Length: 122
Image (cartoon, rainbow, N blue to C red):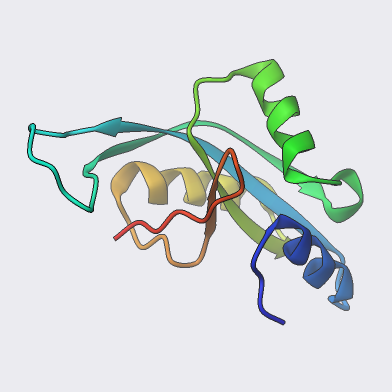
């Protein structure tokens, strides 16, 4: 199944034989623009907050955005990971935060902006 939006991700997770937990890390981007126009933006990414949720706790990305904004609206996009329900979630949230903060390989995460557009970080 090709995942093109948040709903596809939920559908895929519900089909897994092991119950899934989603890991969400909300991050803020800071631009390092130097006045030169480019097709690519450069800057830094800082973790703002993170949470884990079961598939049954999720409905839409807009509902998740609203919930996140009630805590802090100082984020630009969300990194999403998924785990089997019985795995140490706290350790994986910490790893996710460290990956983002340290510029590690982020290819294992789905990254979406507030409007559900995919973000590619190179």
